[in-house]
Image (cartoon, rainbow, N blue to C red; front, top):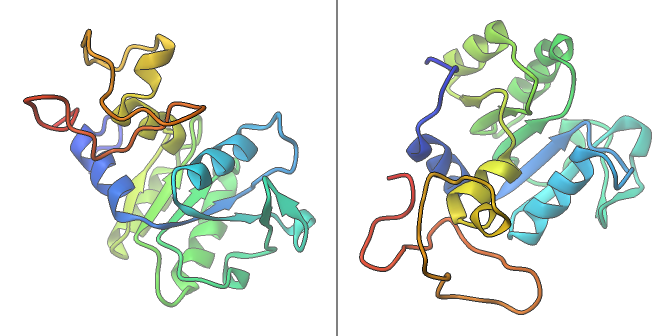
Length: 183
């Protein structure tokens, strides 16, 4: 697969299909991207498991942290990696040792390792590199459009379903008379 660009349908299929996400390299520091990505995904209904050996047994964004992927007490659908590219082969070794095996290996913005991606795909995993699931979810659901970021969708209509407090939209939201965004 060419990892220079992803179709919206590929990203949407992944985000719709996963329920549990392990965030490898999750930080306890609320100013770090890994902290607020884990928190954001949990607020959107994903079961999130922070993985950080230095924080094992403690909480990160209100969720118990684990030392290794093998310590997570649930089947993992997606592994979201906040580690430098040189650590990816080892992370993939941990992923491939899991039973059941995760469906997706996601590498955060700035992280790309083509050899690891090829190994993961050969093992049957979907791979996303150099992208953030928080940004992609927000863009595809229309949440980012509310904050002035170009989502490649223009509409003068407000979303139909407004919650209390923070605006939270879903990937399944269909604009009036149309297909879900990006399809």
